[in-house]
Length: 232
Image 1 (tube, one colour):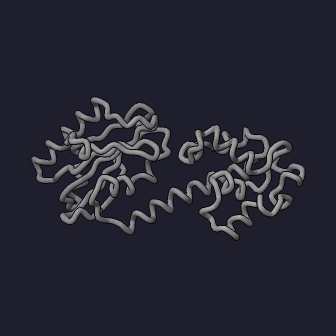
Image 2 (cartoon, one colour):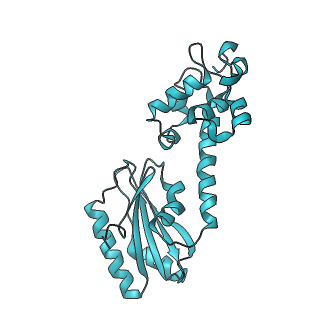
Image 3 (cartoon, rainbow, N blue to C red):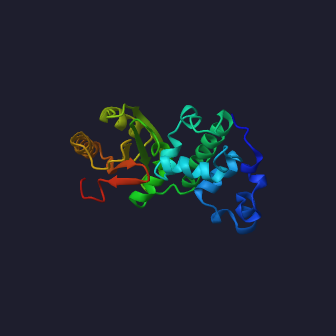
């Protein structure tokens, strides 16, 4: 249940300890991740304030918001003081943050670096527990014409059909493409299968004059770029 003694409610805290007041007086940037989550859940439990509980939840997720975003409602309600409504609020807030980042990248449609490509796909792939394969289709000015998911996979891998990818590229009148998939484990080292697929895609692209500019592997907040590492 979410109802606990009022002494652990944010309303009862000393003025300097209230995250809401801290946000109003010092700005949102002054709040820690735990304090922001505390605003969402409002109260803790019999032994912990909202901030203490939020800190513990974050610690269990290695103080990483991407790890936290992988938790389900069922996972979150295992914590004393977190009911279904609070769990849903946390999940919804993290999803909004992810979508905000994706919306920002849409303004920047020209890909100049591997980081630009990473920003286009980070929100889609960073917190998945299974692999997906995506492709960015670009025009001659390296502007993104289309972003398309090619396949879903399991925890260990996904399948990307070169014929299918280049069919989409031709339909979009793309001049080049950037391949991307995620490693749910966070391990960024390309597998032998990743390397083989990349070489096959580069060769096929040369035949029909659609250049493969890069292949990104996303794991959490980081990525591996075949182009940056001289692997193309």
